[in-house]
Image (cartoon, rainbow, N blue to C red; front, side, top):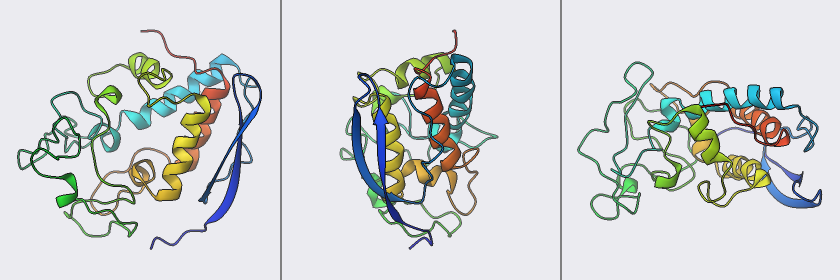
Length: 212
């Protein structure tokens, strides 16, 4: 198991009506500095979005946020459009059910990714993100509009976006892995704590988006 402090924390998020919704997860993230909704000016929200987009547009995220061709990438900072080897196609299922399951190589495990050239693993079953979450070939403004649209982000409101990160942290899932991908892989910029704080700032500012 990855050495980390794990303790229960309660997330209190105030959104549309100022009422509180609670979710409890175990993780090592600090929630004490997260701003309250409506306390962040738009310019700070846009600056936070720029940080978020830097993470989302990194190959660690883009490689599995691909379009309807269902073909994952093996992109790096130097070659971001490199196609996944072995002619992999995850199919409409996005898990490879039609051909070769993603889990045939990518095991579900919370063990650290320490072996060079081994298929990476997380505490969640490996899969492509839903096609509605495509980030390849999308501008910052387009991804921002998708992220704040419940019809295209998994039905999440502002609280749900924060909850998504916290849930991932408990499971040691894909978001958590992207910042600590292990041997031979470039991590997404920053760290999970900074990403959580940027998401909280952006949502507290009303989820502003840059112009096209």
